[in-house]
Image (cartoon, rainbow, N blue to C red; front, top):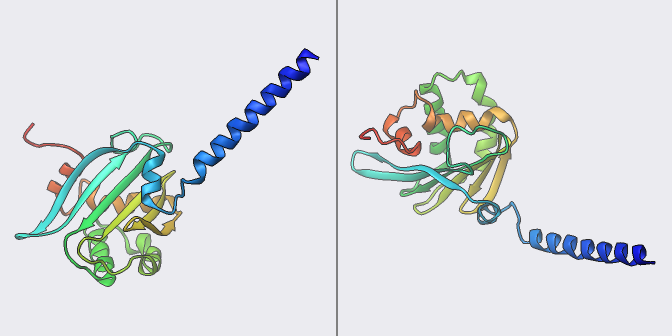
Length: 186
């Protein structure tokens, strides 16, 4: 009889634990960036401001769950946030992205099939807007002003996109160093 009550108590405790776990995760919805950030601690790797002449165009920040880049395992997560300081049309944003891939020598065949996805996904940007890339298991999710706007599940896309800023061949090597938290004066 004791074993019966002991099992019953364990079952009741497990049911309550499971209920608490379900309730605790119910309010975490991956459709907003704030909810993603509540799930786990993200450690800044680096941040920078992109300027042309004396105009600041955007501020960006690279964060990972390990605080390091490149990621060492598929369990690590990455967030690249861009906060715009000026307006830019979706068309112009995509055109600049293509220009950067061309600068990196990426063959058009490697990125052309992503362009229709980006055209559907990326909105016109206004000053104060943010566009963020969240990477988990090499899959990419874009957020606009905290809300999910689309996903690209092809594993090679996240690196292709991040290489615009983080490749050793980037057109902006100073930004790369700042995003990677590397101070050349050290």
